[in-house]
Image (cartoon, rainbow, N blue to C red):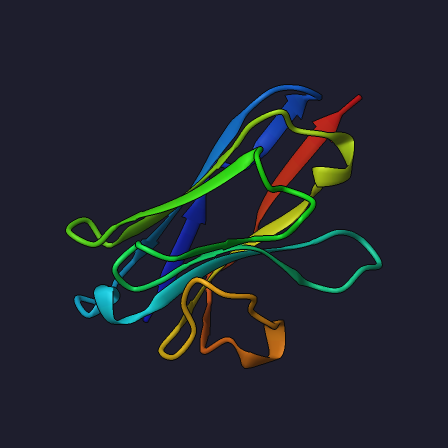
Length: 124
């Protein structure tokens, strides 16, 4: 499956951004979807994940209460709504698809498919 991420940009601390990821595959609903991020010099870590039917979600502790992941299986899209952004949220954000994993913690080396990254920069 091909994934196309968009929505990154420059925002001031406290602001909001909405990331989107569009999938090319008509079997989109058979994949769990996730968002990872990677800051310079750091590992790529899971931010949020959502199950195939959208019922189950996972959030990293650092984003709980601020970020919301959602999906629209009819439109083959997954979104990450990011509010109350902090400078430490600055990173390249990647969407990911996996045939097994859903609304639980993912690890980068287990992901089946990656989208290209989209840069999010939060200024203080």
